Every structure is written in structure tokens, then in C-alpha cells.
Length: 430
Image (cartoon, rainbow, N blue to C red; front, side):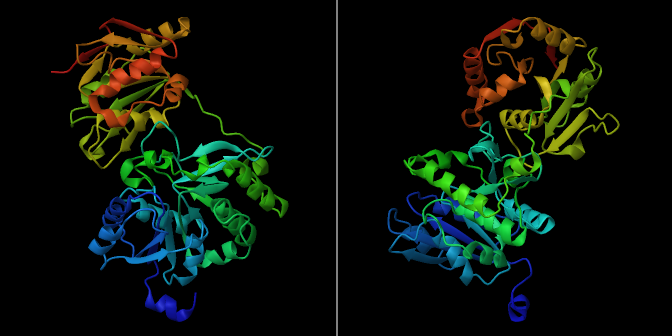
């Protein structure tokens, strides 16, 4: 970047490139960008042909966006080629199915500088032997939003890319194998090969910091992965770059990521309101000691924080969320063989964890057990569930509100037996 350009633009200035093809989420995307905690300097809307009508949205925001329409489809590579016209130090390219949480740009900018890396909301780790996805990062299907426990290097990122504008030179130094496929692999491979620039999926636990809060948009009929030759073409793109020296992460380190079941039980508490002290103490005073307690709350400063007990972990969401979202967040970081649900308005009996653990160990065909509390609350917050089963059934459906509990129960029953007792494990606080 030349001296005059650095002087003209702020060092952290960002140009956003939004692409429009056959989906029309443009207004929702623009609103998400206007609400970012770090605002982009410029927003470009690039439409490929006229499959959808976005004229009203473009006209509504004509003073805040720059619009261009390609009459001939340049393929997925077109938006990356247009980065040569960007004059800000950073660029953020979004597919037409991406809705970023309001803190994502702020976090992506920080991660890009800290890690000297391309930053994406989702990523892939490929199997070295067959070049197919072994691990999905940031794309855990139990959430409606992108989710990643910690900054994680991947082979390539998907759907949205935040990077330094100058790195586009690496991308353009090789011609695409296919103009409408493999651009994500192409970007990561060339930046790694020529500039030693890795690709990372950043830590994103709660929706506000997520790179995509509407992952369901990617599963519609317009998804490119549905086209017949999609997988074959991507296999060929991966092989092309491997043949010129690009090493896959799992190949390089010879490791597989395995789940770490370092506790017998993870207690996941949805902290609703400010009075969580009795609920927390009822867990810390259990006769069973091999557990971790994960408290998911809106405001940690208002909570009784147990800094001296290394089994107690806090996740602060910074926004009001339903208990089902809080439980999903906590379950996503849980390391126990079993997961016990709790809610801050309840206390557990002293032998709850021991009784439930021993029962589940003895009854291997049972996938979950709990206690009936009342007609509306079938077995929460007294339930214990096998973590591998909970992951398999995709956790709580955050989108259906109070129906989420019965919905989860139905999916658990497809995996094995669910045992309900008269309440002997928890009681409601006054």
C-alpha cells in the first residue's frame, strides 16, 4: 500500500463487499452492518445478473452504499477480483446468506491483526487421505449461529472473509480452476503458500460476536453445494494446490481433534435474573465432586462469582437470551461425559449428581433421565443427558421458544430410553 493511501484512509478502515445472486437478504444484511460496533467505511453491493429485485433496498440506502450489477455472471471469483479497486486497508466479503452479529467486525479486525490471518465465521479441516471435510469449525449444527470455542486455524474458510486488502495479490497470482467454485480454497491456499498467511475461525460463542446469526439461510435451494459437480470440482481444486506445496492442517500435524471428556459431569446453568447464589451453592455442595459448573449469564458482575473454584466457569453473553439459547451455549463448551441442566431459580438436592451419574452408568440404554416438575416443565431443569447423544440430536431448537423442551424430548426418544421420576432432584427457590 502506497504512502498516500495510508495517509488518506484510517489504518483500520474497512470496505465491505456484499454479493447478491439468487437470495434477497440484502436489507437484513445492511441493517446488520449499520449496527456493527465497528462500522465499515464503505459498503459495496455487487449483484450478479438480475435474479432478484433489490432496487427498492438499493434506492433506500443509496447514500450509504455503492451498487453495481454485472450483466454477465463473473462467478464467485468476481467479488475477489474487484478487491483490486478497494482503497481501505481491510476488506470484508460476504456471501448473500451471511448475517453478522453486531460485534463480528470488531472481533474480526482484532483477530486479523493479532493472528496476521484471514478471518472467517466458518472453516474446514480436511482429511489428508481423501481431501474431504473431516472437521467443521464454527459450523456446529446445534446452534442457529456460528459458534467456535477458541481461535482455530483451518485449511480454508467459508461464506465470508475478512482480510488485509494487500493479500489479494496472492489470490490473483494463480488463475481459478473453476470460476464458480473453489474460491475459498483458492484464497486460503495461495495466501498460505506465498505469504504464510493462515486462515482462522475466531472465537465466537454468543450471537452478538458470531459471524453468522442466520445459518439456516445457507441451507436453501440456492446453495452451491447442491449442484451435481460441486464436490468433484472442489476435490480437484484441493489436489491442485496440494501438488504445488499446500499442506493440510491434519496432514501437517498428524493429529485428529477429539472431544475432551475431562469431567464425569458438566452442569450447565442458565442464569435467569440476578439471584443465582442458592442454585450455585447447591451444586458446589454436592456429594459427587467430579464435575464442572458452567454458568451462562447476561451480566457476570451481578452474580456471585466463585473465582477460587477452578470447576466453576462463567460465560457472559452481554445480551438477553432465552434459557434454551443459554443452555445451548453452555452445552457447546461442556467437557463432561454427561450434561446436567440447571436453571438459577432452582436448587439441587445434595446427592443429585451422584444419583443421576450412577443411574446412567448402570442403565446404558437410557439416554436421559430427570424428574417431572409440573405440567409445563416436563423434566427441566432436573435432566441429565449423555453428551454424545445431545450433540447427535442437535441440542435445543432455539427458534421455537417453550416448545424446545418437548421437541428435544421427542428427538431423544428416537435415540434411546428417557426415564422420568417423581421429583427428587431439584426444588424451586422461593
